[in-house]
Length: 69
Image 1 (cartoon, rainbow, N blue to C red):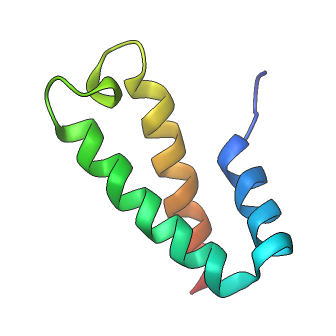
Image 2 (cartoon, one colour; image 1 turned 90 degrees about the vertical axis):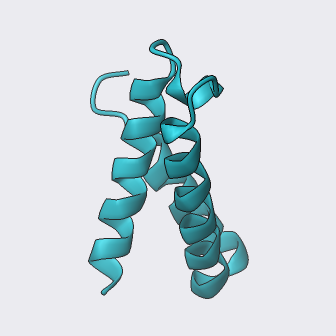
């Protein structure tokens, strides 16, 4: 799906379901985990087939956090 923003949709869902603070904590925690996974050789996230998906997710998390400041 061209132009899809799956993580932003998930974040918006979490904000509605759990509230802003809980969603923000989830984003910060997940962003840290994804960054670590992408940089760890041998992890699924560092695999060439999956890395672009994790990098897109990281970008969406960073974008959302930036807009919250």
